Length: 463
Image: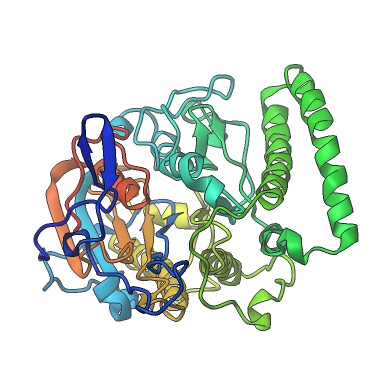
């Protein structure tokens, strides 16, 4: 019976009449039935599976390939120096090689690669007046289709502030290096970089309408009454602003829309069939103490917020940028033996003395991923864990930072997506395989299937 299944919603059809089939073994696990002497209202119990969550996490400046990619495909691959911090999560990990973004081979060194990390489409060269990354990103495609099921459709986080202006070296707007999440080809999604503000945004969602005090309910009603007036005025103002001011206003409008969506969500019946079986304890909900100066602590606070958001089902979709594109962040205080900026070290110029510090930064990035996976694996959910029910995409928009090469991208996928991913492997794809093939497979597991996405040619076999 395990080799064949029919959909549970299959109907018998004939002469214009439909008749629902009873629950059959071919539909999957037999659900518990009511006792023979139970009242007629005690129908078959409904088993609701935990939802799949998806996080897309980006780090800049590529990798030192020899310390990142395994040489052996399959389950028996050897963990490389950069991947060693993920050893305890190996059975939940897919390591990819051979993936490419065809539309990133033209253009400049960085911006035409980072901006389309989650779209896979051409990035228009512009100084900022006519942005285009070809289409919306995979996270926002999901948010548009299933975001209504949670208080927050999606959660966008970052570490560095948005940088505007023009990179005169290449003639691109720097805005392209500050975003991976796009609501449309020309509209990026504002991201929160202050952990405390991100927490307040999330914690406000955790307080359902039934938990609000009368005063909180009154303020919510007042906000709703003002929103239409604010949005109308803002749209008229926007047409008169310069491009940089438009982006600042767009970030403000995103915050206003979020309030509107939250009010709408809690003013109707909760559409979620699944609810977390356990709630975070009080110490999990303590607010961060403002924006930290320590880069690692900043990153880990944001990872904590993703875990908390997924645990409470406040959202099922999140993105995080460890740093903006062309990041020159100095890791000397974090990693022994590393001196100089990240971007500078990524331009190793084939000098051996830069290989090791470059590789150590790659390893540090994977240590932070391991931190998040530890969190998710510790949260029980049904017969598994939150990590079992998640997909964590982790990678960069280029392979070797010195060559700015968008082929053989360093991509990892952690989690099992509810048991639909056969993890614990290195998948060595043929050279030039579209990264978007993986995105098609991920979208299917999020319940938002598509035939094509970006430059995809087919779905990737990850089951």
